[in-house]
Amino acid sequence: MAHEIQTVEDGFANFTQTLASLASGSARQSTIVSNTNNRPAAIIGYRIESGAAAPTAGAIYEIFLIRGDGTRRTDNAGATDAAITVVNAQLIGTLQVTASTNTNFTDFWDTAPLGKLGQEFGTIVRNSSGAALNATEGNHTKEYNLYLPVIQ
Image 1 (cartoon, rainbow, N blue to C red):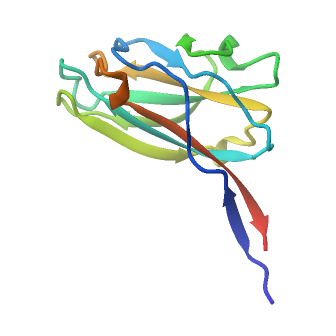
Image 2 (image 1 turned 180 degrees about the horizontal axis):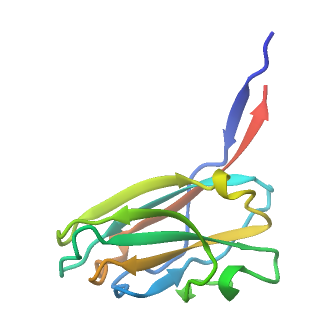
């Protein structure tokens, strides 16, 4: 019987991260997640809604990966949801926007190409769209699904 690689998924969970009214040119980190099961990678998903003012068509929302060892973290990130300046964080992906108000932009990315997650991780969202994000926090989705490839 041949062996195959299957993926054990932990199930989607939400990042704690405040994106309501995030101004263009600003960035916000999520609360750090402890990787207690030592999963090597995660699927990261975001749905970000543009605000009442139209963003610049073709501009982007950027999503970055924060990693840490329990003491030090990428870009000196703290442990909780807060404003941050992106310096060295690895880019996970981007959401390109249209010039539409109150519109959802959604995608999912795999962290595996960036290497193992390590002890703890989180994300940063930088708004480079030319307009503030939607003011209702519930209109934004920030989630992750840790996974482990296993040989069966």
